[in-house]
Length: 321
Image (tube, rainbow, N blue to C red; front, side, top):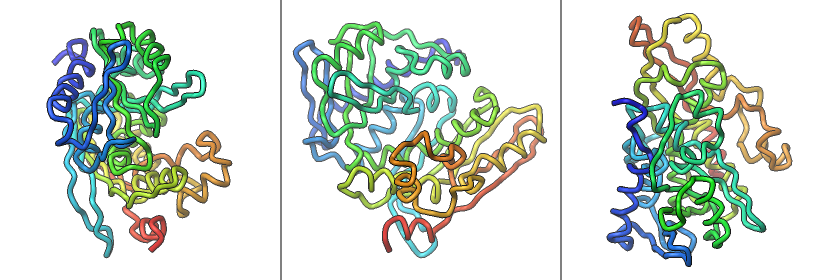
């Protein structure tokens, strides 16, 4: 399928419509704002849950990925885990799922991810890099926030997306919620692709991708929760990528650098590192934001490269066991 004909917003809109038909079964509530936008709550006041997290993750992927919640063993520790796969990796992850839109309007701030980014082109550099443009007349955005957005935020997002407010669906999921923990672990594949792209690998070489990561026990404190969420991927995230690349030598070299253990900060709970950085993500070594384990198969040569490993001891330490 031609990338130009793929609409992550239209795909996600279908998922949202299904949720809105029977929100109770998803642990969600649906409200209509004064301007006609839909706000779907998956954990602010609504119950949320594992199914909510699965659906939010699939919305974030622009309907181009499949998500399952299972259980996996990490050493002697058994944890719920999120398994993700996609055959449109660059568009699904960088073009949709990536949390690349920092929204701040008045006193309200949230991290925006999901399909609406492709209409607002936030950030522009990513869409140029993956050669993708969405021209849908509806938009779906996912806000990681403990508050539903006020009307001025709805108007701001609609304007940036070039649509009317009544064509906008806003999914809200708090960090410290079951759905929040699920959808962050569901970013494991995206984390690896983003890392590779920052190392210089063209994201368009990715043909398919899959991976899994544990869902850590939920913590009510947002900062503690962010620490545990990051540990889930840094110490428990496992990814497998199929690529079509002309340079095996470069691919092998980049694979070795695309795992969290390549970072000088590796080996401590993320909360410790984060606090030392005064809760500023930009002061944390960027090499740390990577999966624990990466395996890459090159379709053009048949060669396979792997690096990193799951670290059950650090997962236990993160949880406090």
